[in-house]
Length: 184
Figure (spheres, rainbow, N blue to C red):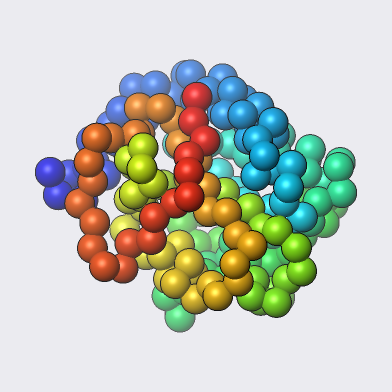
């Protein structure tokens, strides 16, 4: 199957399971919160979920509660790029609709390469393999972002529903693998 065919097939599967996605999201969030990556992270790079993605709200609120810093992505469509912006708990409740209808912060970006401490990047995707290959929505925003990282204390973790894990995915030289997956 091509990347486009896989995206379409997964999208159809997500539609058929829409009623269960909230429950699955809570299970995945519990896994994230008890993980070593979360415990050791000083900074969590998360995302605002679309209706067919794992909702990370409970992870974000818990991270604030235990004193971790949070950053969310903001797409700069005119530059075909994505940046991350640090947010406060208050700002998390006041995100604005941005690119593709995704809720985004309205702040300046931060340079991931100069942040002190460990960083956990929770990464959405259309499909993954168990060994960390990732298929996104097709614009390459995360792959471009990952390719600019030079910092070493980073864990890139895919976040998906278990039916989004496939045996194999077509990849090219620009696709960046995840260090692991969180799933239900």
